[in-house]
Length: 408
Image (cartoon, rainbow, N blue to C red):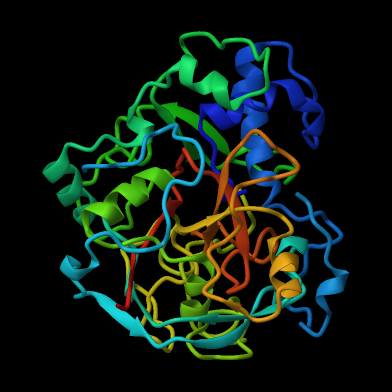
């Protein structure tokens, strides 16, 4: 549902593999295939089959084995290939550390933590991270605007796709889509007005021309009164561009999870072990029946200003919910198994390259933390161990980032 975000390049890669779609028949019209098929595939990584959905009242003693998978200058180029950035901060000596917290490194167990865990969250394995700084909160619209104003940077969602570049990322022989599809656009959550099957995410996502970080709900929307909201509709390379400008970097996936745990060895969520539906409001997530009814019990029905809920023990806000967050790592489904086979892994950087068996032509990065669309009946993305895979050249209105800095 929420997070494997997709641009048209990602979308196009599905044209020749529509048999992978669950609950969506092969569409004959090319534009329909692009606009509907990709959205569904984008969400399969987040959706769980009915047999895996757990009522929040269930006990959490069940083991992970019971779970099955469902579903600036020198800026990185939009369609660059290979590994685009290591995790070392650029000009970290000039990075402004205000608004950041020093996380003292240590060894910890990383990976799936409850009945909601998906196969790529396992096996749990030991990781050691060095000390690092991380932002207390997600990068805001105000902060990203300062970067864009200073550099003239244009985000991925603001650019019209170039078919000559796009076709290098899709299977050979993929037909060129029509010009009305190759426009600057992004995906926006559009809730249906009735209950719907959770098998077809295209029902609640719309490809909206003109949607971008300045216009998060589409061209008629703006950022008035939203300076302190997390910036969204940013691709991984947009996030990296900001980090480089700021002399910072994206956290590794291991750093992100270690920071989210806040020193709590047995925690399932950044706040501990209590279910999100119990006690006081803990995060900006989906309240009610997804995707058509959000009661707004937590005070919000969409994104919220940063820092509206209690921080974790390390003083970090919104490590659960509000917006998914990019990390530096490429995605492969078996990376955790590789890590476990290596014993204690020190400062893991992620796999050398991306490979998603479901979509081998799509280069994917990991996103963490969940968003305002997550709930326990669907993806439980606000768990510390929850991870999602997302095409690196795209963004949605529920994905942002925070920065890190290495300790020299």
